[in-house]
Length: 67
Image (cartoon, rainbow, N blue to C red; front, side, top):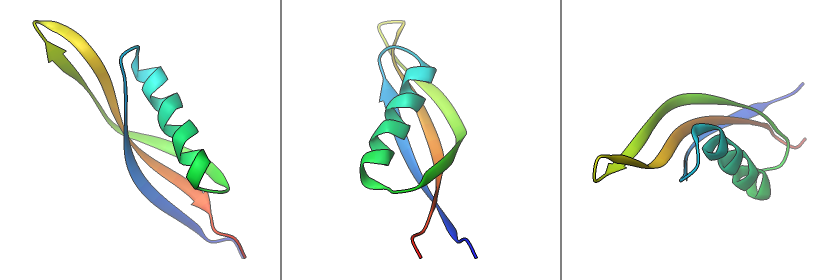
């Protein structure tokens, strides 16, 4: 039997939403073993002086627990 857990995290990038997702998955994989998927629950931007300064995503990361 396989048991998985879901944890939520937020990741930010000055480049793009795609880069924020990649940064979030990369960082999660440093701490969590067996990362299998991620769901982008929400995305938004930070604005400074009328311009986008950062892209943020909220992720639900699924990983399989060790036996």
